[in-house]
Image (cartoon, rainbow, N blue to C red):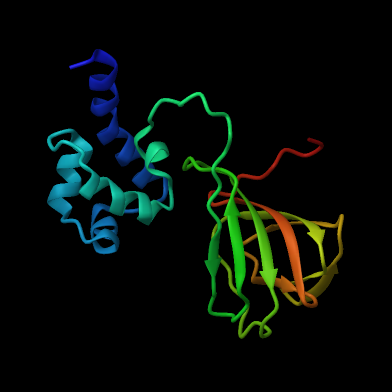
Length: 191
């Protein structure tokens, strides 16, 4: 076997473990979400089971990652980013389209998000992390604790997501550049 290919294959298991752990998932969580057994996932992560497409595709879907990013495939020489938009219909009833701009699991996640008009939020949410977003177009309504803010193109919001919050369009729709640090990471000031 080609030594480069052998090295790539040997690195897949530890990479899958790192991705799962970075996302705070247990093997049980991953097994429930993918339909793969805990034993299979454990053997795959430890290198005792050879990665195959029927195992890797459910993991790529679960992690919302391109297969080549999931396994750490070497670059093809094509510098273009192949962005995959995702439609969401959150429980608040506000549809949106999210375009992940970062594909590797990590601490700071970057998205372009188009917020569609919908109902007002039934309740504020809170969760660990830190959010930062910049309004590109439209008006964004941000509920943060007991405050309501209307943000316009060029405005930026920066807040701890442990504080009860909700944001959505302040009118028909809005477009934002959204950074989220699930572990409290935030963009550096002044950059």
